[in-house]
Length: 359
Length: 241
Image 1 (cartoon, one colour):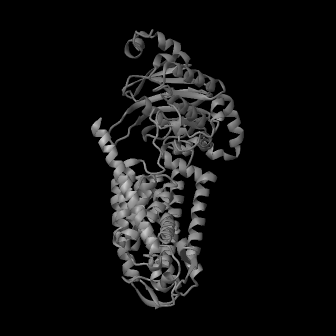
Image 2 (tube, chains in turn blue, cyan):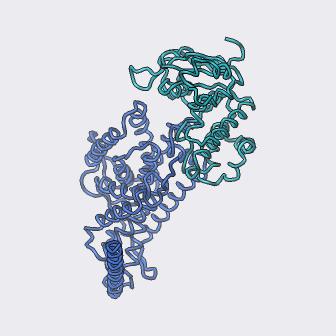
Image 3 (cartoon, rainbow over the protein chains, first blue to last red):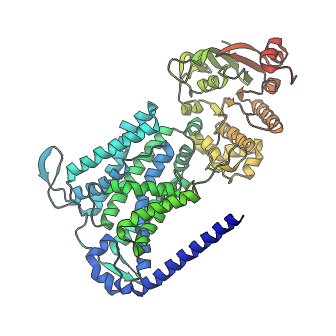
């Protein structure tokens, strides 16, 4: 009894200390608002603007976290849908993010480009928006091809999930090297012009980022509408719940999974394009590096839960960006993954995951 | 084959793993509107037999016909289209979907009739309509069984396959399930049910099949099987008589 009480008192003391420390640091940081320099990479080009306004670093980092979280959600919602409907942890999802950005650059740049093994240089030079739309459409098509040629065949042959996951790791390695071979090792910028930031009260944001956020929100609302309000979407949730029962109900499970692959690849590509705009560049392995954050977001939100990816991504984004107020930026993703462990210790099914009753 | 035979399984050999047969020649003939009970000891292949009728276990030899048309090894969604419904023993609802959404999935292939069917099913299961916005994952075993049956009935099947519908239910709930099955059968649906609760099942069945080691050993009316000394000795036991 005494031991329990002691532990409780100790925990409360630690909690009070942490809250006090956060409060004091926040006040001190707000005092030094004039020195605020966002860790957002896009701020680098406009440091002058960031240091002259009355920017509150906490509000700014919170906003950066929301923006990053929304773009991460766009990339990870497909990962969650694929996991939900097939049980596959698709390690090759990050490359679809990179592919979206790279293909947009390939279609839009005024620089000469080429294809692997074809020694001819040419310039397509489409305007940015049609290039991005075509890239999303091609990426969606690639999702269809991937499922048709590879994943549906493995499912048909009843290849186990661990084996399929290993295949996806191999595919990820192959794709990342293919993208490097195709586009080279240097980061590409989709739009050359600098996006000037505007001051809105205590925060700054550029028009390009605002539009990106608008597109991400619209796409995510679209996904939610699809899942909740359309018959096909409800069937997708049914397949996610129980594929065998879905089939016994008359749903063509393979067709639903095919649609999920098309959507997932398209959303990942769109996420990649918007991330490349936000970060002012995309390297051949950026998507691969983002994969761990996507997995963390999906797990944190509730594995396989359709809206878990959104909630998880927002938490990861905000925690990662907010942590840079107090901790070195190099640790921001480590902090986000630390939060993942903490949340899972308290709520093993993730934030939105529901514990099912047995019997 | 007589004219009103709706489902005919001829000498089925089937199994889950290559080279290992669970069914070693099961034959069954079901007439339109019959209520059939399949009983037998553990491991006799009862559930496997039912699943092989529904294309969930690959049939290696033999054939299944529905109203004279070959349906052997068709996909489940193709069988639903042809008027066969199936209620699995476990995992028989979509837990994150509401009751109404579960029923909607049952009518997935005939979504234009959903509202009409929902009204019709509501008369058989009024409690489901009262609680249609509740998540199926929060229901008890008996309530889930009800949702599962209602879902399978949404397409107006000619033949309904039930895999141990009374499993895990209290005796009172089991009785309710058997009565409901009989009621569904009386609306004209041919029902084939696999049951562990053999005595209760045979009481309501028109005919029973006794499976033993993957073959259909006997068939007779439910009442005859209940009185058959061999069936009593081997499967029914004498305590519950």
